[in-house]
Image 1 (tube, rainbow over the protein chains, first blue to last red):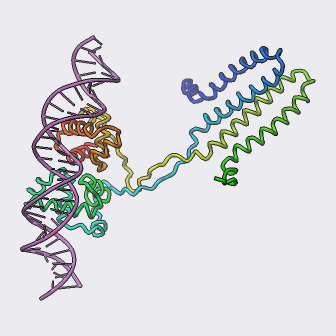
Image 2 (image 1 turned 180 degrees about the vertical axis):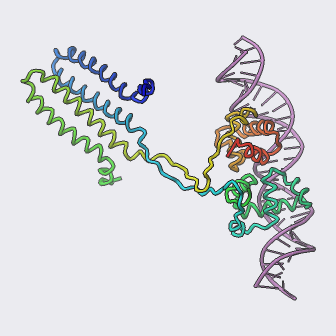
Image 3 (image 1 turned 90 degrees about the horizontal axis):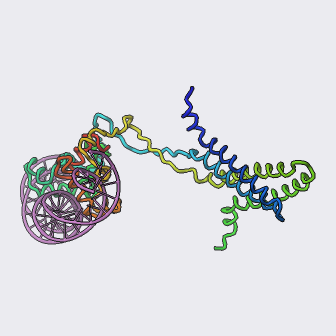
Length: 157
Length: 157
DNA sequence: TGAAAAATCACCCTAAAGTATGAGGGTTAA
DNA sequence: TTAACCCTCATACTTTAGGGTGATTTTTCA
C-alpha cells in the first residue's frame, strides 16, 4: 500500500493539527519571552494558553466528528416495478371509470384535450368534463399533477 | 417568561462548563503553588493547561454539537431496486442546460409555471422562456409531451 | 323496472400555458 | 476581445386548460 497521496489526504486533519501545534509553540515561546518581564505575565500567558487550546480542542472535535451524522431511514411508498402492474385496488378505491382512465392515459402520453377528443371520437367538452372528474378524484389541480399522481399510484404505466 | 427550570435545563451545558472552569481554576492555582519551586515548573504548568483545556474544548464541542447530529434523511425505495440513472449523453446531445433541467424536473413534479418561478426565485416570464427552449430542444409542443419524452429518454426519473 | 352511475355535450368565463420578439448581463472558450 | 451560450426579464398576443353549471342519453345493477 504505497499510496502516499492517499495517506496524506486521509490524515490531513492530523497533519494540520501537528503543523498548527508547532506554530503555536513558536507563538507561545515568543509570548513567554515577551511577557516574562511584565507584571502578571504569567497569568496572561496561562490565560492565552487556556483560550487558545480550548479553541483548538473545539475545532479539533468539530473537525473529527463532522461525519458523525445520524441517518434517518425514511420509508417512501414508491412501487413502480419495471413491468407495469395496474393497481386495481387504487382504481376502484378512487372510483375512476374506464373512460376516464383512457383519457388519463392519453393525457399522460402528452396529447392535448383536442387531440384526445379526436382520438376518442368525442367532443372537446366531453374531454374537459372527464378531466374535471379525474382531477377531482385524484385530488389534483392540473393535468401534470394528475399524471404524476397516477403514475405514482400505478394507475397508469 | 419566568420559566426558570426550563432555562436551567436549556443552559445545562453552559452552567456545567462554568462550574468545571471554576474547579479548574482551583486546580491550576494549586498546581501553580505546587510547581513554582521546581525546575521547569513553568513548562509543566503550561503543558498542563494546554492538555486540560484542549480536552475541555473537545468535551465542550462534543457536548454542544451532540443534539445537532440528527440531520440526513435517507429515502428507501421499497420496491424499486433499479435506481434512476441520468442519461448524460442524451443531456449533452440535446444540449439541455442545468437550469432547464431543473425546470423540467419541477414541471414533471406537477408544478405550474408560477409555482416553479416562485420556487426558483425568478419571474414567470423566465420560466416561460426556459419552457420554450426546452420544448424546442425536446422537439415537443406541450409540457406533458416534454415530460413524457424526458422520462423515456432517462433525462428525468 | 327504476335509481344510480357513466358518458356525452353545450355555454360562458377565467386562469394558465405557450409563441414571438427583443434585450441586458454574465460566463467561457477560441 | 469577440462569439457563443446561458440566465434573466419584459411585452404583447394566441391557444389551451380548467371551473361551473346544466342537460340528455345510455349502461348498469339492485
